[in-house]
Amino acid sequence: MLGKHDVGATIAVSDIAAARSFYENDLGLEPATDMGEAVVYSSGASRVLVYRSDFAGTNKATAATWSAGEDFDSVVDDLHRKGVAFEQYDLPGASREGDIHTIGEMRGVWVKDPDGNILSIVDG
Image 1 (cartoon, rainbow, N blue to C red):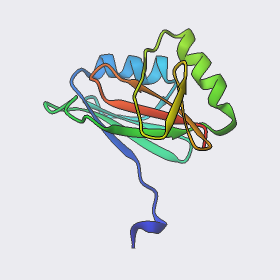
Image 2 (image 1 turned 60 degrees about the horizontal axis):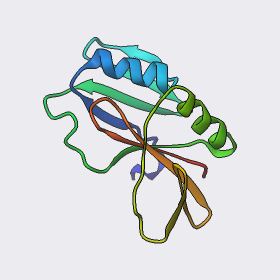
Image 3 (image 1 turned 90 degrees about the vertical axis):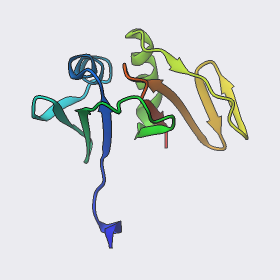
Image 4 (image 1 turned 60 degrees about the vertical axis):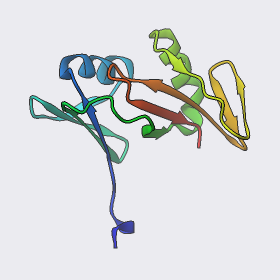
């Protein structure tokens, strides 16, 4: 039923101004719709809804993953230049070189937004 339809990430934040700075300046997303306390960003064919919530930062798992494909290394380098901090995890079956985790054929990194929401970028 839903397998034919697009899906988007929904990310709760406590401070919409701080979130906008991170998502727009650090991640390079452009607002598609600005609703004041919520912003919808376009990212490829996907949408990311960032909205103000009293429950922001309570998710302890990955909230959104971007597949950067061939641009993975340049995206990681750009985030490094912008001073974005990378998370490091001890994952079963994974190896790590610097900030990049390798699991099988996939390489990935994790970052957190100002509320601690975990975001992933992979090369697949």
